[in-house]
Length: 152
Image (tube, rainbow, N blue to C red; front, side):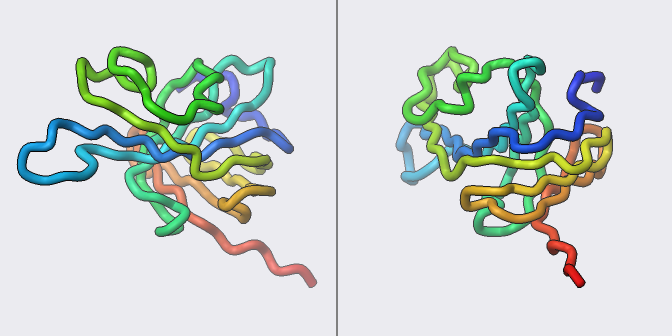
């Protein structure tokens, strides 16, 4: 993956953490048909692409999740909340309704940003704290909350 932001270390950047779900036709059961969580980080106006993790678990509850990095050039997705029409970038399905809710947002410092390891310090919002992302296979990542280093 040769994205311009790979080795950039950045301070005080915007992030958003969104819950993204689809609700198909009610046949036997009610509830969500499919869901994931989006962690998007904007490196600023000079970098056109967002760093976008698609996660299988809610890290606000589990403090750890697996996922992958998905290309995202749509910076307006950082502010999107509500119904996402089918056939749009936030809902590429043919006719399944999709919804997006902003769970938290704020500022983040990107402390390490390598091809196989990333370290984030979320300064504000419900994710506040230190998180690391380890690449475990081709475009498969584990993101988890990490301990803040003790000060002497």
